[in-house]
Length: 520
Image (cartoon, rainbow, N blue to C red; front, side):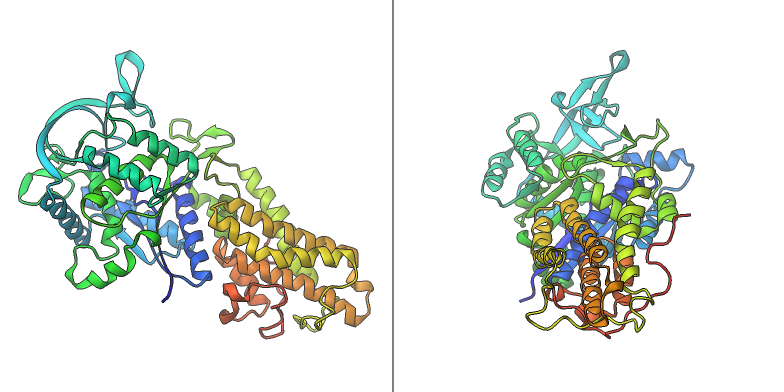
């Protein structure tokens, strides 16, 4: 049976246009999706936009736009960004779609039928910006006697309203037990400890309001048979993961059973929404009798030139602008190399330029250009591997390179499985740098034609393996490199990623323009 993975981003809130942090989340998820496909998995990969709630109502009103038209516009901007950066989603979900409305109503009905909700009243704090009900422990003092949300710093308001509550407190112990047994894993471990601390808090685990009065929140999904109540935006939004698998659609029950399985699910999210995904979401799922997600990959945020990114500072990075300047693959490469899972990454245009020149153009591009130069390789060939027994040339530089290439695939996979993407990429960088050192030491232009081709083979074989492994990070340029090496599409999978497997395509390489042209 084919192994499967269901990879998701959070659905992105359409109150504003995408920034570099949104793109990073999508690139992390896409890198994982491509990695799993490369290693033989069938992959469903979902992303999309969250389009309901009071904040959307207010944003549309501020822009003097009908709410649906406002959502259509912003959602299209996310989709355009993801398409131009090669995000290989299989499903793009919008919460305004009828199929999602049906899934949310099915989820509500399931919870209600299992006696997981009851009518009540809410009197307490609410953050419109975060769309979150908050306890006193979630607050800090703001200016002039105001209160702010501790995590986001956003203003909160005190409100009283009729609501429907979810019996979250009933799931405090079962959730803690699920984490203890490893049924849900939060990566990195420091954030799992944060979730466990939340689960131990009686205040944070008190019953949760899961509806708002329709008089206040019109833009959302109404509670079945209670049109005066609108389903809470986070219950609505989180259910998107079920929607794309077919939940609530009687014609897609087999599809849902195939894809919604604990050990297949990886939710990629930012650290700011870990409470919703690490506490509320598995509680909703347990209460509905559904599998919990097996992994929550929670990444850190981005600073800009070591300064917090914010609208008030005017330093929010426009992802379309940097893709225009550096190209989609260079941006993806920098994000995956320098982005943080544990600690915040730092975006710096100067550093992107340095990485592009030093690692992409100066190492990988240079290695390919050297090995395919007409003066050294006039026939434009990817030579066959040296005969068995001659694979390791007598020079120490060749022996070191071969050792790196033999261990590279397994070591790369180990870091990918640990979600240490930067270390995985660095292994490839180190192998390519070693191949360039080897090339300089061997000086193949001084060799006889026979041994000269052995040096060319080792350089091109390094480039081939680098191209195979970097397909998940920068699919455009890695694909172009493999095309130039004559690596056929059927030889771009995990089993082909071994030292000594090169020279198996057309046997010809193509030169032409440099792989990484100068940045304009």
